[in-house]
Length: 440
Image (cartoon, rainbow, N blue to C red; front, side, top):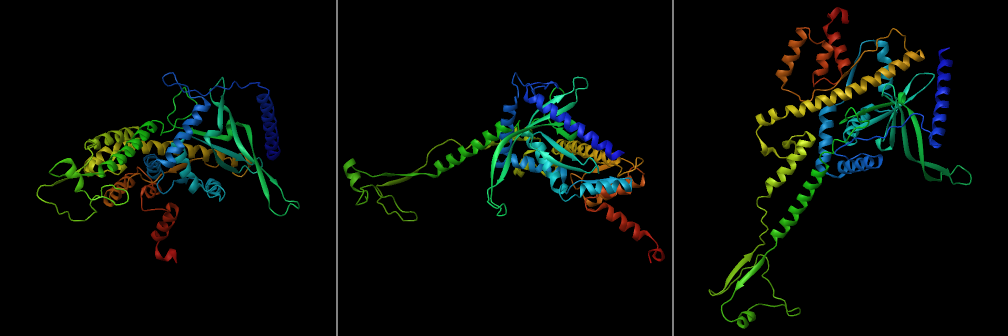
């Protein structure tokens, strides 16, 4: 009966989507699409301007070294070697492991993409594909640039539908027999309405009145461009400073001075001394080397001021941009606290995302009958430590908390940066702790 009920719900859902699609094409708007606007000094982020911001942030991440370093550094600190999770119920753990280690999903790679995309675009949209019979879930990230709009419920204010517009490729077999593998494709515009229960949407830099997130690079994009332009100007100035000219003072009249210069017999131009040559002149002549005065000796502080704006906008401190001369070790550690708080907040956000995802996996497994209803749904998402402290300090702290009953042995192992396989380590500890006669 459960299987037939899920099939009936699936058919109803598809019928509702078809009705919504027809209504959208006829310009009928039963769900009252709310325009996505975030007002900033009278400026509205229309869908077009939002896509432009996405493109600018993506281009900066791909081509600007500082922008790429901001994104990569945050992902390195937040995700580390990858997340781990603890499941209390062994039956639930089988379902979670089946989802997490699915070779088609590759969560070991996808979790890094989630962190990167959340920073570049300010949001992620994870699409869930649910088998109506088995309850198994597949997942894939949707490019935020393809999400055109979000429909909200007038009563609860929660999202109800997502409007997706994208370009897809349609392949055609151009071979005569159909067996040669010769294909051509056309690109066509497509759109679909996705129910909210099939999307997990996470965003950053979002106000309560907004519906979308804002890229973390948005604040620093102008300063990244100014800093790049400043560096290009510095290269031009240094090239100009490297150029020089000779000033040769020769006693006598102008006509006499003109005759003493050695000239090229073909062009008639004055031949300058060759590099490394020795000049032998009489005591009446005077030679000088002239350099252009560009007045750029004090430009170092200008560049540092621009970099400080980038550091302030990104939350990444100055010495992480390759300048260790800005302070000593003690100063650097004391200044890192706000940055570490930022990374911890990001771990909590991503941890909440994975907890919601695991809860959905468990709920669908129970609904399909793969899991009994009495199975525990508690899943703890564990991140590696952001900063690896000294061996003695972290070991002493974990032992004290374990003896005081503040944390479990499993939690202490997960916080130990030198333990990669927590479950395997627990099994080995249990085997080694048994008496020799029992282990035999």
